Image 1 (cartoon, rainbow, N blue to C red):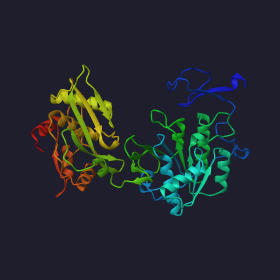
Image 2: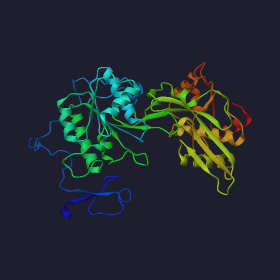
Image 3: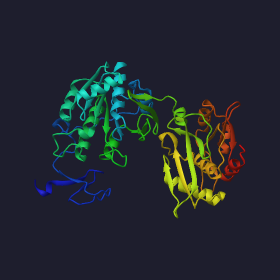
Image 4: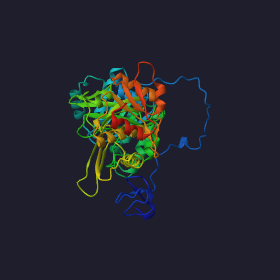
Length: 457
């Protein structure tokens, strides 16, 4: 092939280079450039002659056509994350670590959707049909009317989906598909982009709702070009810590529902089990809490969740103290320690600090600042917090406790699980009605240190 007809595409970020280089200038990865042809069309199939030169027909924002009803699969947690069910003609990208349970989740979704009357197809490029049947038998869904196929050729898949009408189609996975319009191998940036574009186009042209399974990189990001995430309507991540049976389905992008919505599952020997009350799951047994433990009332999407934050402050045995965090942001912990030292007089320079979110959940909202600070103060002073107390609030660099959103929903969730008091910003006190949780207002972080040291709430 002539040299001027070649391009070099990064397999990590999709950046295009005119000549080969050891390092990609777009993302900085090494040895990731793959040789591809310039003459290949951008899509998987060549456009037809009838599509050339055809003008656009504009429409107005008003429409008399009613919206099609969502497809309720029967897996409540999956439907919640999708925004109340799967939208017909939508495209969903599902990513997750190897072995986390993506195929198990989607097989249960298709089986329950088929039992509810939906026409579903499961197309696998990674497993044989007998392997899928064995998993279905183990999960107890072998009697569901799911159409199975094992294929990787995009042209055959498109021909079949245009001929046979389905409501939901699972493609497991997009990295295994290949198009004969491109010379690149399966899993390359060109193949992934082209195959995803054709499948999304099929869904938008009155086709089925398509769920694409995507591999992830070592950093936890969905592999392949970023443009695939822009093409689809929803990007879901299936997360789970090794050693924990809990799995979190999280929506990072959703054109038909709330982002950052989560669904909670528990992995068992017969498949995934839905967890309808994740707060009770993450809190565990209601025993007396040791110093360094604080219950945080958080919000994940539209759902309030209570989770225990554990901290341990111990004398450092070496010159450089350790800072270890599991389930929270390292930078946030460093800021919190600086505020405690500068505004409250608590020194951590000669102490090791360990912070852990119990249960394997990962927290990113700033409202967890006060709960993490309370856990650190409790451990440093060796004073436990009350058993029935929840904590939430954001901390500023000046040491003030700032208000957070949806305080009333957090307090209602705490009351439902038997908590009778809360350490929260002063603005949350007005959200309490008679008979609800008693709120101890905290305007400054110094007040929190004083209350914990004197056991006064």
